[in-house]
Length: 382
Ligand SMILES: Cc1ncc(COP(=O)(O)O)c(C=O)c1O
Image (cartoon, rainbow, N blue to C red; front, side):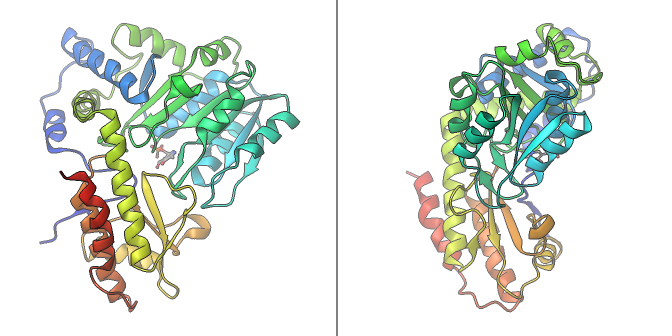
């Protein structure tokens, strides 16, 4: 027997009560019964997104909301600035180009955050840029980008939108959409929402809704105007992922009960504990200067094959974490701490890494990483 733990940056573990609520017999989605559930979820989503705006609920993975943000707001030939500091930044650029937009790529070294002045420089040099596309949390490099500082440049430009992929920031650390002036914030169910994959969310500012009036990109399924109209009637344009919406209602209740400030504080505590443990184990952090509280990236020691290391943790120890992508493949491990995750998930993660390091011939003193994490995790207890 092997007890399994899911500590990857998505999908994340799903709480037992949410699993049970999604296992109820199927109900029809065009019924007052379903609409009542949808209405609750719709309201509570605003709380988590820190916005007064509607939050659209789409049957898609997070990329669906990213694609919809491009197709609903721009026209072929429009120019956008892509903050490309990892796999998901790159995705913004690829989607934009797929729909005929002209992408200006602002390349950022993996593991580093974009400097706000670089964004300002690009916007000043190219007044035709109609959108800045970025991640709040670039999961592939475990970096948090400075959204607030960049919003300060874009919010007063009526002809330029700030479009933020909050797929691993919403419900993890603050990205207060209305307060900062983010124009589009998207997320996905399989992250801090503690649900299986299958729902994508998108919230738009008034400025963004105005852009939609003139946007000419081809679109059909992800038609935000149509979805907003249906949302008002507590339904969706097409068949919703009904079981996931039921789970969403319950997961949001849990987050609301904990309180958003406490949710952020928990993620921050777990992240700090993980970073301290990584350093105590003698490993190097991937993003020491601007780390995301969603996931911690660490280089595996010289001579250790990171791919084999992650596979060993998963197949022999039962602990699923993530490795690296592209040029970081085989070089790093990513320990996720978002969603339905608490103190003892971190203990499991760190102690399993210590044991696996020993197996891979790396000199490690058992308990050093765990002790460093415990010092910080104690903050969570009176
Ligand atoms: C920051 C970020 N953006 C986009 C995505 C893509 O989301 P999905 O795989 O749900 O389409 C992910 C998924 O890991 C992500 O972490």
